[in-house]
Image 1: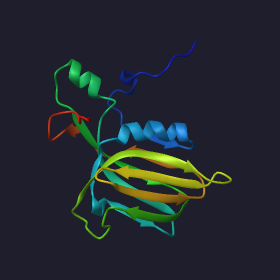
Image 2: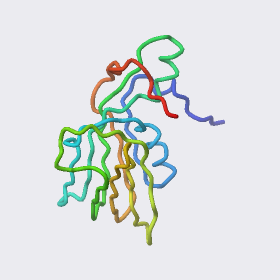
Image 3: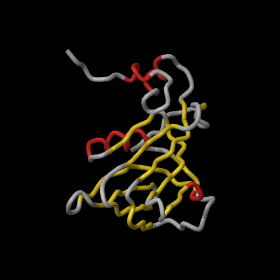
Length: 158
């Protein structure tokens, strides 16, 4: 008999996830929601066909334990890599402004023909990054140890 994984099963291990379809991407989107990054922490490597972001993500998977134990909420630096990239377009942000802090709201997939489509990274304040891909492949990988969230609080939404 199998059962769904629980947050407790992850322990303190860094996350390493790959999304190959929209359902997988929804999981990654939930985990990076409210992640913040300076504009300078985005890059498009045309030769490797990869768009990457280094995000300070809120550890949503740890939040229930932190709340139950009245301990600090945590963030961790994570790389989001979008593979098979053909084109990147931005809206509502200035890519040359490396100091502006951006906040990730969601990552979604808009399918096209034959597995191609667009990965849409929606940012707070009407910003967006639209990444045209030949095939959907998004990677999320924690690259640092968790650290205390500077605010000490969980992000809240209206």
